[in-house]
Length: 120
Image (cartoon, rainbow, N blue to C red; front, side, top):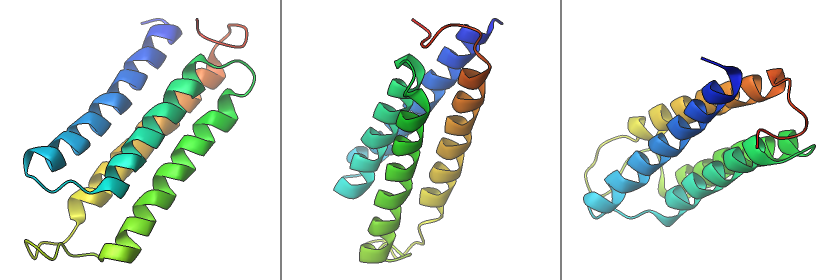
């Protein structure tokens, strides 16, 4: 698979993971705005990271850092255990790890791109 297609596949994977994460919260009627905002921040950052010109690295980093900060604020405010269900927030950290790994892969692929500033 050519480099551009791999990058777009990774972008799609990031978007899919974030959509599943947000969708699960909506489906079980536990809408947590900080978490959903963090999903949106990451998706926007990764999309800009793929399609921007010379500032793609900054966009990718801003999305990833914003994602981490919003999730850490969420844990600081609401704790490591869901007060409604009494279950720990292990899925939060699993989604975060997967999302950040996929973001890292997008950045690595984008850095290898022989194209001029953007993939478009």
